[in-house]
Length: 104
Image 1 (tube, one colour):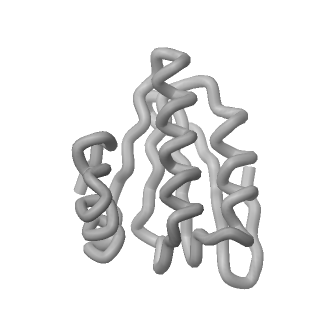
Image 2 (cartoon, one colour; image 1 turned 120 degrees about the vertical axis):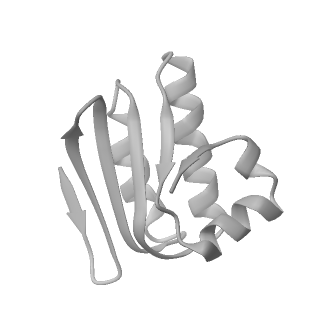
Image 3 (cartoon, rainbow, N blue to C red; image 1 turned 135 degrees about the horizontal axis):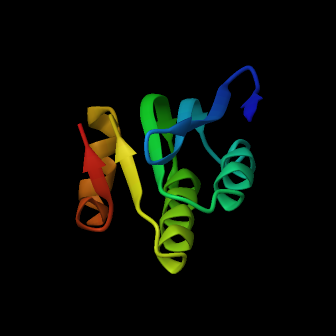
């Protein structure tokens, strides 16, 4: 599944142990529904690859938290992979670096 707009793209592909969700561009109020639609459909372990994410606001962080909570309720893992330093900084400021599993 791939959803794309001029400023945002999300692609879901099978991974070695579940699903890989690649996010690119700007995750904000306008694009969060696209990410939510992808995450809500996944009933397995999820790795969210943020290497292509250039911006996120609080609605983007909230979408990632909702995805993590859904995965936890289903007994599945939810990992953030390759977030840019600015995204890690936001997660640290909010104390979410202790909530999410983050892989370099």
